[in-house]
Structures are given as C-alpha cells and as structure tokens.
Image 1: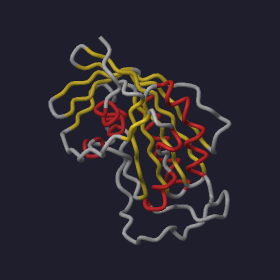
Image 2: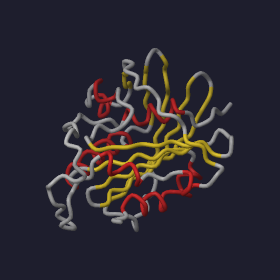
Image 3: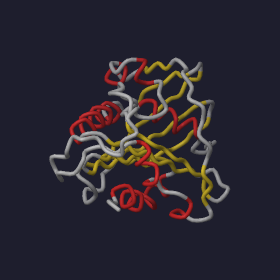
Image 4: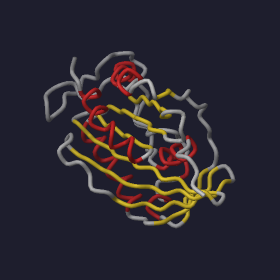
Length: 224
C-alpha cells in the first residue's frame, strides 16, 4: 500500500540534509556585505528578503493550498546503515530545514489529493552553499539503502541519484527517495539548484517537482 507524500516524509528528508549552524541572522539587513565572486553582487539575502521569492498560490494556481508551518520537533534521530550520514552527528539530523542562517520554506498540497510539493530557499556565500550541499547529497546518494529511527519510528529509505538539469543555475543535484514505514511507502523527488549565493531545493511528488522547478528558480533568482 502506498502512503501519500506526507509532511513526515518531507521532514525526515530535510532533517537528514541538516547542516551545522553557521550563524544567526539578527541584523535585519537585506544583504550581507560579502560580494559574490561570480557576479560581484552581495552574496546573501536575509530571510525576510527571501520570503517574497518563494512560490505562492498566484504562481502555482488555485488548485494548490499552502500548508501551515509545523512546530519544530526535536526527536532523537539515529541513522543506521549509512556511515557517511551517521558521521554528521545526531544533532545534524534533528532540524526541519538546512541550518544556513538565511532560509525560508513553503509547502503546498495539490487539488485536495495526497500530492505535495515543498520549496526551501537559502542564501549564503556560494562556497558555503556548494560545500555543504555537496557533502550531504554525496553522503545520501552513496548509501543506496539505509534506515532512520526518529522518535521511536523506524523508516527504511532507498536513495537513487538522478540526472540533474545542468542548464539551470551554477550547480545541480537530484535524487529520488523511497520511504517505507508501517507497511506503507512514499516516493519523494528532491532537486537542488545553486545559483550564485542562492540555494533552491524543491521536494515532493516527482511530477510536481518537475512542473514547478524552473518557475521556482526564476522567481528565486529574480533581481527585481
């Protein structure tokens, strides 16, 4: 029996991608002052400046409903069968999003069905974004199967590296994750694009990820 692509599945995926925190954005400034080596423009946008760059219902259509933000949970997370992920440490696997200091996230359901799509947007220096996401994706794709125990729930996971859309952004990553828990399964596609000092991650039902990836990147990287 197949279970819908749920917030739980997406949350576990994001948790596995969590990175040690760099710093906290408390300045309220729209930009950091470090310039991007690629463009000469400021490298990082604040979380407040990233928010309007997320897709919303006016971009997606009336069939999409935004899901409310979930309260952050801090269940103990253990990774079994993937030493590369285990070495990141338990603390790195408990967050709901990547812990770069500038970040926003939105999730939507489609047409009253079980299909979902989520968008995460981060900003930092190109080097930090590239190094962090490369390290995590390499670890995940290097383990075809592994298990995660979170809050007493055991989840079996299979990962498959997918061809990334090389015509988008500066760097690209893509993978297909299959989750099994309680006799049910869920499939999540996850594609990440780094464009200068921006990192976009679109996750969810494979068809919805493919449908909205280009639109999400265009809005996220727009300068006006």
